[in-house]
Length: 386
Image (tube, rainbow, N blue to C red; front, side):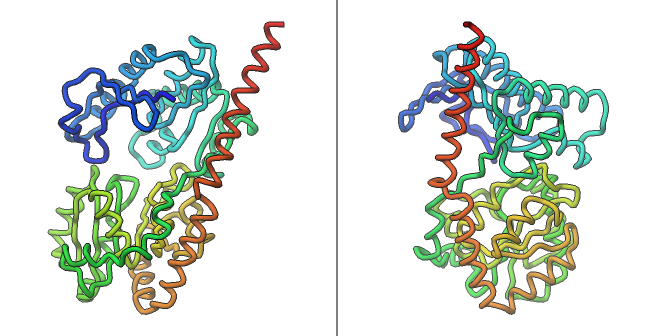
């Protein structure tokens, strides 16, 4: 297997020193060849810089891929959306099929979140999306809601399949190995009820609702709201918390994997938040991580979203009205007073993750679909030559 990618940089938007200033690099890890190519990584992200960032990767990865041996199949992961065009071009050049793995419906998200208005640019994005979909031998995505979105764009239903997210199996036994006491001690959280949000702090998350809940509970010295991670909205959130003088809110940087695991074990309630308009255009991977780790989840999200459906089906959490601090605080307050309910939610969350996302269940199905895709492609090519 060969992977064409850029240097590591996310989510800090910082390229490690060992990868800086190099146009190309080659690594081999666990038998997988990794071909890295340069890309523009801005220190501060805005729309123009993001376009340059993605465009630089599309150009460099295309040239880098041409240096690799001809594959049996191309597997392109989106975003960025433009990789569909790269995969389509390489597919025709090499006469091999490509699978387009869609993990975020980028044009829909940009429009529905108000990040872009409908116009020439979005029309172009939708044309790129259509070409990427129509030329793919197989389209995979994360959830049934996302699958339906793609089918509704005029793509044959049998061509769009589900590749569910995969859980980190080590998280299943996390709470049996640690209680998170080292995390609590390091950040002076002993005896506190920890409500955490971890991951990207961007626009679509609508994280202001957590500050609204924190403001409503500022007199509860036993509760702490812990933000872990980074993203475009972190600075604004920190400034907002300072302006509101919220003593119960803590911001932490991106944590190393071992400390992140300790944080999950220490968490009493984990939050997943999204803007009201977000429904079936994305499915944040943190949902899988949190439920796998047995974290009770309170999801401040659209009730029709994939996150809401997963949380409710799991029995491992609650769903509340999005962008409503009062509803979020009401749910948190109720669970603080119900330790037995939290204990049951932990068990149900983990059991649901194992049943839905365990790699021993999902990867064989994924492998089978990819093999069938290659076999069907070869059969059609053989019949066309007869």
